[in-house]
Length: 610
Image (cartoon, rainbow, N blue to C red):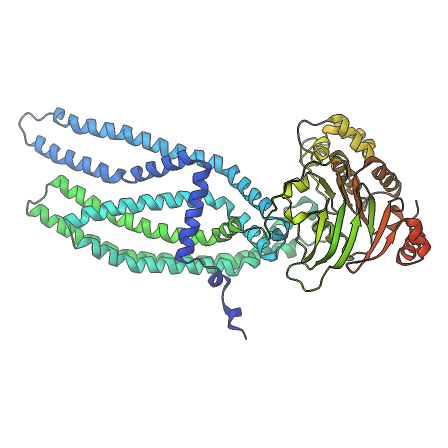
């Protein structure tokens, strides 16, 4: 058996020191760019805030010494302590300001970053291109990144606290070395076992969760089944509740028992090793008491140095815990970091296309393409020339390569060999946005914006400037959608989901007509419809196809369909099979050839008539 199969995913994906530093720098840089001023204020205020107990201890120590001195004087009065009380009051005021700055800056960053981080995520995904987004491992990163994206802000706060704890620890170490030179190395040495033990238990816990991710996902899906009102219909009727409940309970018991066992060992071991640090602290106390007995220090100094040793110990433990916390969190954020470092599969071009008023010519020249991570070409040595303003239909059975051809023209993927030219310009040399401003594509898996109104769904076809209601209605009519829209309670202002107040749920066919209306509204120079009427009734389909040819005058139109009977009015029909063009011509020409197209047309006509 391959030993690699015995290696935990945790071991394969764990974060080393170099990656930890990179992830931390990236998170801090990301948050800083979102809110520079409040980021700096938060770090500064946190460092000052962490020093608070040291400063208070010093002020109280001096006040105690003064109080003892004053108490021994005849006619002692509280007035002697007014300067110290004034200092305490002033520092309390200063501390209140620092706490406000720290709290407000943190809240400000939280509020702003909550939306800004999500925007940066979808900006990044939009920039890396469809070909990269369809890589399986990139999809895994996206899935895991979405789980932990909300941890970016807590990670930043934890890092700021860690930095402040280091500054505080360095201060405490400096003071302690000056006063009790032997104490600092002793407490540092005594803390090493705790550091290693704490890290090992964190690793054990995270490894358990990581290795049982799939089991946890099953529990999450079962929970979703039992809390989804739609799924509960079938669950209740089939009496499946008890089975699913037991499945969830068994997984819950598995996680609870194993995690509690790890926590028990963690706490017992941590408490035992913590006792070792307490012994070292007692050693430090004896040194301080000896100095007091020898009258080297005052009572106030004794209180201060005892407190300083405690602060030293707490700061050291905070640094240890903080470092381990950050390593653990950085492991969770590793996929998020790697996702943001992902680059497009191929670079954008630098030639800018103008906005065309007429449909351009398109040439597919010796095109061969194989999808990434596969070996069989989907399209091989394909040649096709589309004239400016021509209405062309591409037909063929499922898997013939029709949709792939459209994805290549849309430059979602880069061809392995050959060229795609638009007005004699290679599309790989084009700046992608200038290509897209001349193109409209309605794919089989069209978008349904359920949270938006009818008019907004159509307007997204060309979302520049204000919504033009006249154009919206013309587009809806062309898509045969105007009749059912007018029946909606709110007509073009109707929200398209029953999950929103006053919303309704359109049928699948109605959604497809709204998607068609969106592309009638776009009215681009290159118009591509990929199975545009798959969910639409025959009468509407017939009307829509006729309007497509009429509506997009002087535009280059490509219609992809496996329904041969619906594309007979195209200027030219191209038949694809196994990634190649096997026939091309008008409906009449192809029928007269009595070939693949004619046979398929006759077969479909037997069960589909208009």
